[in-house]
Every structure is written in structure tokens, then in C-alpha cells.
Image 1 (cartoon, each protein chain N blue to C red):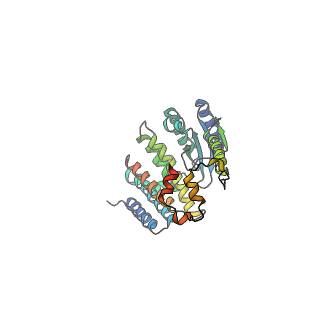
Image 2: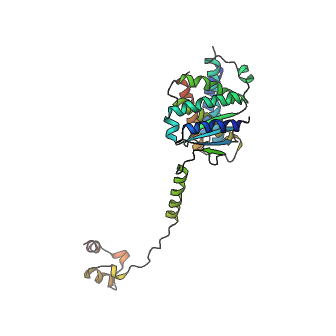
Image 3: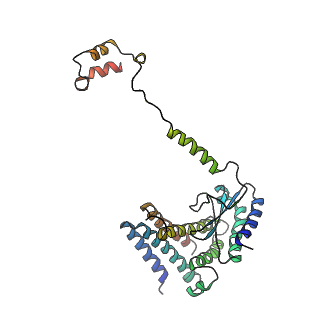
Length: 156
Length: 133
């Protein structure tokens, strides 16, 4: 029996015992290691019964296939599986799907273009008469000579 | 009595810390990983009574694989009913190996974040193992 067939059979048994646990299998060619990902991470971290199922399997696998390596991980691992070779109890709305959904929304947000108006509609402006008088003055040099009084009036 | 692998492990970590100050980040990852691996060999030989020759003769491919397997056999017992440290170790060491192989053979020269992370990972693994050995 090949290592992958052995794992398929054993992981299928675990998947039936833990229907809420998603099990992904992949192979990391950089370190030549079989990777088994258990999701969600809360189950991996806190489910003692699940530990009792996969930890003995990890040793049994390495005793049966002494040339093969294996590690069991969850979604927080840098070895996380992107393209599983097989999967049990695939989650309907798993984290990847949620991330994908929010990624799409995020992209729409980032790509949303808003054209800022280059002019202000005149009806939107309410200016008191003294300021209009100031602005209409032919001697007004707004950049250099605007005084505090103008700001006070604008704020009033 | 000398403990050559413990001394080698300390030296490798000192070299890693020196290399990162010189911006040699890929080599930092390499030395940090080997500091950790030499520490594991130190435990197997000095604490658990294995010999280097015996470790090499065992059926697993490569001494890294064999050393991890032998250590896991005892660690899973030592942690008792709370398996968190065992689970962490059995994932962290292969992930660290992956980072070291990338650093040595693949892609671009690594950045400083990964160099510092490697030193931190090596120290985390060694400190976790010190709790039990």
C-alpha cells in the first residue's frame, strides 16, 4: 500500500468520527513531507479526542513508512495547504471562502473611483454680505493679505 | 564532561546573531535552524542516551528526520495529557526546516524579518524543549 493510500484510508476514518473537522491532505515537495491540515483551528488546538485520533496515526504512519515524513497542522501554519490532493468534510463556508468574499469586497472598495467636483455649486454656498464684499474687492489679494477677521466672519 | 553538541548549538546561535547584524539574512536562517537541530541532537545523545552512529543507522531517511522522530517519541509522553507543546513542536520543526531549505536553495535572498523570525523560532523551540529535557 502506498503512503498516500494509507493516509486516505486512515483520515477517512477520522473524518467520520469528527464530522465537524475538515481534513485536507497535501504534499510539501520542498521538505518532502506529507501535510495534514485540520480545521477549524479551534478543533486542532482544543479537541483532546481529535488529538487522540491523529497523534497515534502520526507515529503509526512513520513506523509503517520509515522513508516518509508527516506533520499535522492547522490554518495558522506556514505549511498550510492551498491546493489539497484530497479533502474530507469540506466546510461549506470555510475561512478561505470568507476570505475570498471579503477580498472581493475589499478590491471593489479599493477600485471605487470617486470624481471630486472641481467647482462648488453656487446654491450650496451661504456667505454673509461682508465676506462677499471682501471677495469682490478688486484690491483683494487673498493669499497675502487675508486677515483674521475674514476667518472669524467665515466661522460665524 | 564536555557537551560538544550543546556548545555547537550555542556557537551556531551566536553566528546567526552576528550574521543578522551584517545583513546576511539567508545565512542567519541557516545557522538558526542548525542551532536548533544541534540542540535536538544534544538532547538525544546527552539526555536520552542515543549515539550519533545509532541515530544515523536507523531506517528513516536523513538524520534530521530520524532525530525529530526519536525526540517526538519521548516528547509526546513527557507532555502528559496536555498535548499543546507536542503539537506545536511537531509542526514548528518541519515549518522551520522548510524556511531553512528556502533560505539555502530557493528564490531570492531573504529579508531581515525572516532572519529575525528564524532566530526567534530557534529560541522558542529550544526553550520549549528545555521544559522537558
